[in-house]
View 1 (cartoon, rainbow, N blue to C red):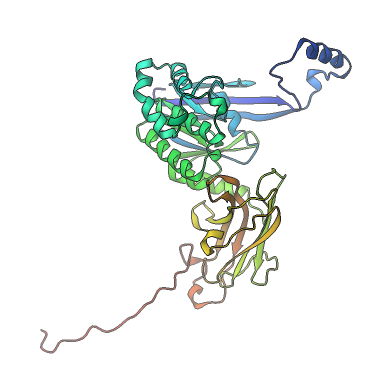
View 2 (cartoon, helix red, strand yellow):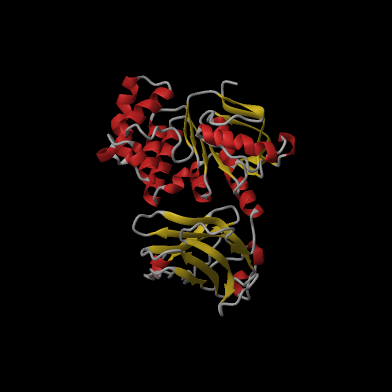
Amino acid sequence: MSDIAIRVEHLAKRYSIGEAVVPYRTLRDTMASFVRSSFTRTPPDQRAHIWALDDVSCEITRGEVVGLIGGNGAGKSTLLKILSRITTPTRGRARIIGRVGSLLEVGTGFHPELTGRENIFLNGAILGMTRREIARKFDDIVAFAEVDRFIDTAVKYYSSGMYVRLAFAVAAHLEPEILIVDEVLSVGDARFQQKCLGKMDDVAKSGRTVLFVTHNMAAVQRLATSAILLERGKLIGSGAVRPMVARYLGGHSHAGYTAARRTGKPQVLESYLIDQAGRPVARPLNTDTFGFHIRFVLPEARSGVRVGIGVLAADGTVVFTSGTDDVSLDVPAEAGEFDARVMVPGDTLLAGDYHLALCVWDSSSSDIFDLQEPALSFSLEYGPSVIYNRGEGRKGFVNIPCAWSVSPVPTLIGRS
C-alpha cells in the first residue's frame, strides 16, 4: 500500500438532469419557490438522472504521470473533482495518500476579494504549509505567473489568462505530493501551455504524482507514463500510453466533422476529405493529391485569426502540422462564414489510417478558440507505384524522395 498514491474503488457519481444550484436567494425568492414547487415538484425518484461515473476502479502509484483521456461527457472532470474533494461520490470511495494541489477550473481555490499575494498564502495554508515555506516559494510563483505588477490587486480584477497563470503557479510550486490539473490549461496561450507542460514534467521528475486531463494527445504522449481511458462514465482501459491513445482515437473515428453547437467564438463548423478537384472522397490513393475542406465562422470582425491542421497516425503520433501562416495567407478579418481548403501532395503519406486535428487560434495572443482532436479520421490506400510494390510491408508514415547512387569502387593498380 505504501506505493499507492490514489486508489479508486467502485466509484460512481449520479446527477439529476436539470437540477440547478442557486448560490444565493432572498427570503422572497425562497417563499416564491416554495409556492411554485407545491404544484410543479417532481418526486426525487421520478427525476431523470445521469451517471457521470459508473463503477470506476483504478490505482495510481507514487511518481506516476497519468493522462486521463476520453471524449466530452466521459466523466474526466467529475473524477478529478471527487479526488480533489470538491464533490462527493454517490457510491464507492477514493483514497488519496498525500497532499493534493489541484487546478480544475477558473475560479476554483481563489477568493475573489483577496489579492494575488493573499491568495498565494491562503492556498499554501490550505495545503498545510507554514508561512515560512510559502514565503520561500513566493518569488518563484510570481515570476512563473508573470503577474508581478498585479500581485497586490484583488484577483476578481484579473483577466482569465492572469487568473489561470497564477492558479497554476500556486498549484505546481507549493510542493504538493499529488498534482491534479484539468483542461483549464487550454485557457492560456500556447506559450504558457508549453511552460506549464514543462513545469509538470519537472514536478513528475521530482518523484511526485501527476494526474491531468487534456484533449491534446501529443501532450499525453510527451508527458504521461500511463493513461486512463473513460467513456460515458465507465473505465474502458488503463495502461501504456500509446495503446490507450490509439484506442481513444479509434473509438472516435468518423469520416467527417460537424460542430455540435455554435460557441459564439471563432470555430470550425465542418470538415471532410476531398480529392484534387475538391469533391468529397472516402479512401483516396496515397499517390494522389488529396486534402480537406474546412468551413469556419468568425461571429464578429476580428483580425489575426489563423486556421491549422495536424495529421496524426493511428496511435496519436503527430505526423505533420500545417497552418495558414505557412503560406502567409491572411484569414479575412470581417465577420462571416468561410471555406478553407488545404491540399496534401501525392506520394507524401504512406498508406494507412490517420486522424485529423483542427485548430482556430489568435496569432497575436496565441489563444486557442477551437481545437478538435480528433476531428475526423481517414484511410489512404496504396496507389500504383513501384515504391509501394511491397504493399503494407513498407514501414513509417511518409515517403521521402531520397537521392541514391551506386558506383563500383575503383581498383588501384598494384594493390595486393
